[in-house]
Image (cartoon, rainbow, N blue to C red; front, side, top):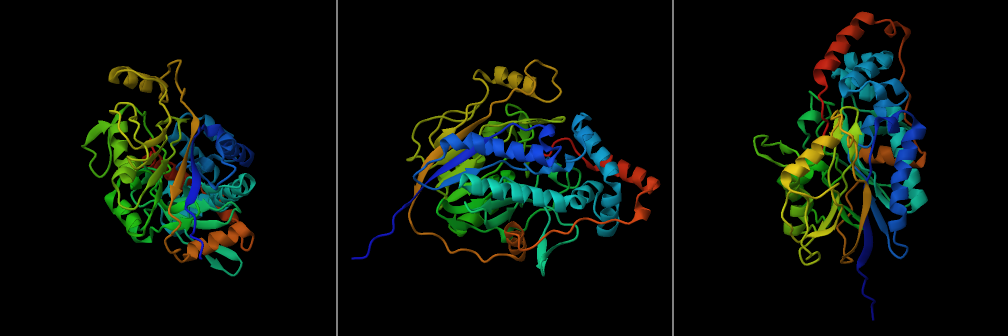
Length: 428
């Protein structure tokens, strides 16, 4: 008699960390910050089943601060970007001129080889050490291809990209964010939108994983494409760049002004309670004031109503079923009290509670049928990153010519360009 395959039983873990600019001023500081999140997760790791740890959106973006500690102390994102562009002018200027991109994208691309290597190798080492399936969060990552034993960068392209690793630190796959917020577009940090048709689902012992990075998890085209491929676990890494109890209109309808927690019900919670194939969703959110930017939220793990019948929900919303695990906000109270508490914690408030946020870890034990979806073929970009992670290929270091260093006039022009093209809030 043939034994029946067993169900997939695993534990999902969402980490809600607090970041600060100082966490990104050196490779050592970045590794320590990332490790602290796995240390937060460690007490929640299940010894008898696979563990899936999900980190937050854009946790690699502030690596542009690396090596320039002064940039972490200048007070605003705009000043930091301008200072960084001038500091790295010999490397960033040729990219700006050759690839015809904005100053802020040129800066990120010029530093991308070192920062991509640091980000991926840090995540690989943590996945191996803690023995977990790891959604690394997301970071600005260029598009690469392999040429021999070298990675070659596609000109001008810079995605908000989530990377999935297995417990051995090997690449499972990547997902690029499709729907960018205004602050991620040309007038902000200037990222490249990912193609919708490249979204794929990755079968693993911890679910058939589909990634909807922040705003993507709100969008019907993204959720529909993932469900059409059999996604059972939706991962939503998030960096919400606003006070959690503020009102805001989200694209594509900025005129639809709602409390942020009300808007958030239209992402992971809606996908897992009302979807076809999606059974669970994991939504970690980063908190903390990064220079003059405010990040806040409530991390959650959601599922079907029958799996989570206990009524509860985000602040400023009515209790409902579907929350398997939910991190409380910093306080409870009526709407006006909560909004005031959010303003007090926001960057630049000057209040004694400024930058006081709640961090924590959520976990939930999940079960899925044994059957998995077919594994998608690897893209050339994934082959390149896989080779980098195994040591089979390397990223070339940036080079520049001596004539570029004294380009003072162009530097001043570029400085003005940076000031015009960097916005205040690179929210998720």
